[in-house]
Length: 134
View 1 (cartoon, one colour):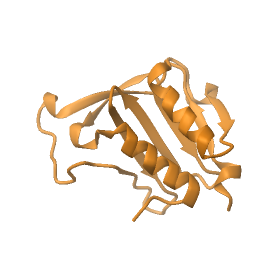
View 2 (cartoon, one colour; view 1 turned 180 degrees about the vertical axis):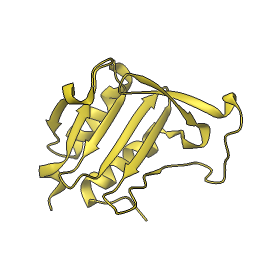
View 3 (tube, one colour; view 1 turned 45 degrees about the vertical axis):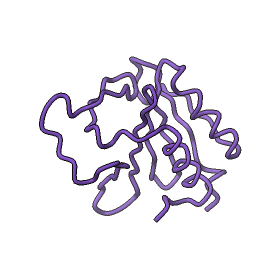
C-alpha cells in the first residue's frame, strides 16, 4: 500500500464535528512537514493523519510541546502514545497538560508531552515507511 496515496490530513475547526473537517491528500514529505508546521498558528492545532485501512496518527501542538497518539487497526483496538517517561503516573491536576484536540480542551498526562521536532520526525517516518520506528 502506498501511504502517499491514501494518507489524509484532517483538521477540525473549533466547534465543528469531525464530519465537517477539511480533508486533504498529502503529496509528499515536504507538504506534510508544512502542514505540521502550520498547527500552532491555526484555530485547531491538532491533525488526524488517517490511512484507508482505518489506522491513524493523532497529533496536537501547544507551545513547544506535542502529543502523538497512534491507533493501529488491530483486534484489541488499543492506541499507543509517545511518552518521555512510560512509568509516569499522573496523580494530581498539575501532572496534566492541556491540548486543544478538535476544538475540545484535552488534559494529557505530562509524560505524553514530547518536543514538536520529535513529533515531526515520528510523523514523517510513519508517512515514509508506513509504520512507527522500532
